[in-house]
Amino acid sequence: MHCPFCGHEETKVNDSRLAGEGRQIRRRRECLKCGERFTTFETAELIMPLVIKGDRGRESFDEGKLRSGMEKALEKRPVPREQIDEAVSRIVHRVRSLGDVEAFHEEIERLRSARAQAPPQLQPARGGRHKRAGPGAANRDQLPLLPPEPAANDAGPGADGKK
Picture 1: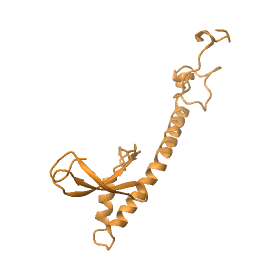
Picture 2: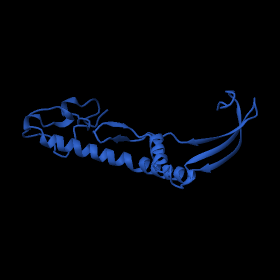
Picture 3: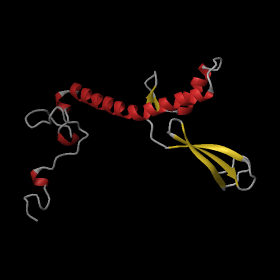
Picture 4: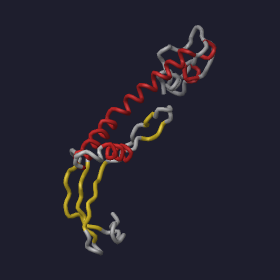
């Protein structure tokens, strides 16, 4: 960790504590060159879901935008900074734990509805290749994202149970 005062690369950790409802580690550090002390917060870096904007555009979830929006909304209110930090931490935790699953589910439903609306000649067959619907067409619940099942003539060594 570089010292924010002199830029020196080596610092010493004097104290570590949990912060942000146990989702962060607060560290008191001291620069080994200039002796200045400062605080850092360590959090796990996780991939956040995309936010779908009002114009249907997508962008990555940004904790900084959430925090600045809350600070702007509460700037003339007697709300301590610690309460804002705790609220942001709770919201970010909920987005991490719930946002990915719901987005994945919505994408699956979108793919299913798009396939159901496709003309019969463009219905996906097994493995995602398009062919005319008819006998032997793919199961309607199978998504084209699944890997193709090996055909009998594509089977490699050991397909008949022998090595």
